[in-house]
Length: 89
Image 1 (cartoon, one colour):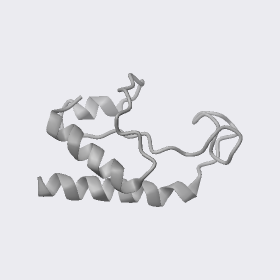
Image 2: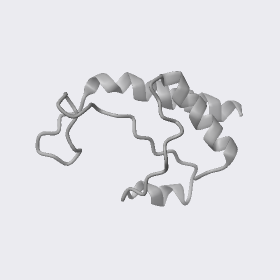
Image 3: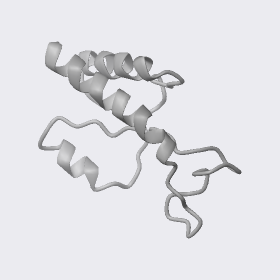
Image 4: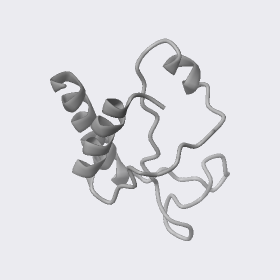
């Protein structure tokens, strides 16, 4: 899961975005991304795309899935804050 310092950096970046659950439990999702994390520092984050019954609130692999473009600024703010924190610490 990373070091205590890694978790603090991630939590601070999440706090800058707002509406975060930086204390959420780890998820054992089936993603190839984890293989990259074995070789380089990595951060896999669930940004959120919508709530059930709203735009983007359907499962990712559903034929009804419609990416909510309005969430892009949130992801940009999060990863920008994470990158800034990582390079400063």
